Image (cartoon, rainbow, N blue to C red):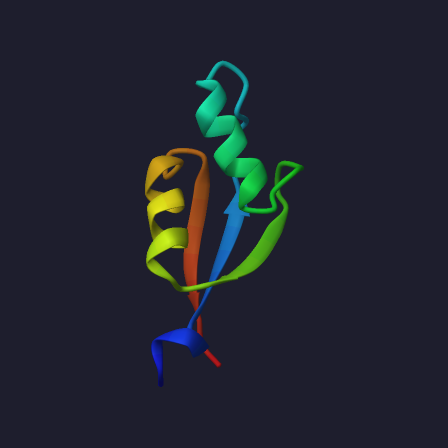
Length: 65
């Protein structure tokens, strides 16, 4: 399976109240606006970096196609 076909399922799990502004902005850039919301994103180095920055606020799963 090529790298571009892989997806990650990201769920907004913990509130961003009280965290730094750049972390709140990163959660928004991932497409997450509400707690409990889930989005599927491509598995790219840029997305992985964003997820690493907010790893304490989200849960990540691999999507099996």
